[in-house]
Length: 265
Image 1 (cartoon, helix red, strand yellow):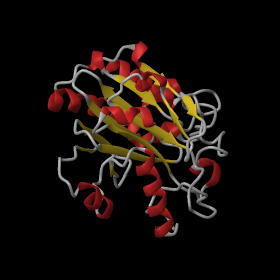
Image 2: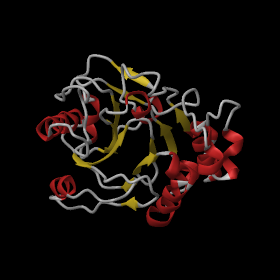
Image 3: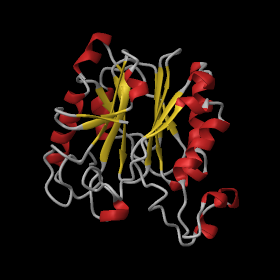
């Protein structure tokens, strides 16, 4: 994952995804927003006790950074439901007022920007450059052990005829194996995932996601992990484990309405 210096707000991008001119994406840091502590400063969640006006301004900053696309948010509930937005002009405002209850989005519609809100959970981008379909997944530990990744890829295959061999997947900043301690994991997590735990009860959810992607048919060469732990890097990203009361950063991906806009990112 590479840093985009000189951009306001600062965000990261994955080099493999930057090779597709029809695509825009970014994992935004916590900086250059309007929110006051403890949500300082680019908090994009309306579900916290942050000032709604500050959040809406932060979302405006986000939209402008992504060439003014329609931002599609979710009411994330740590489940495995998916949402596929329709091609309607009023989508952005409607979804802002009443976001769908789901934890993954899929679309092939240019101009629809899929946004995941995170503060330790994995934001996972998936792109099919053949069918030109994007997906964005919110994978907390509950969704991870229920394999929301596999469900998303199966839906892409069924609804959009995506071939898993064509897919590119990128796992954004999230709780790393260095900090993902689950003291009671043998009560909370199915036995098939116990092999990902170390002697200190820390679980490698990055590796779980990698294996789920490969089990779904992706090539290992098409899987990219940022390697950034949010709890270790609270200077850059929000972390619930590290801060408790904190904001949510944005991970966004979508197809551009006009491919020439790609050069402005």
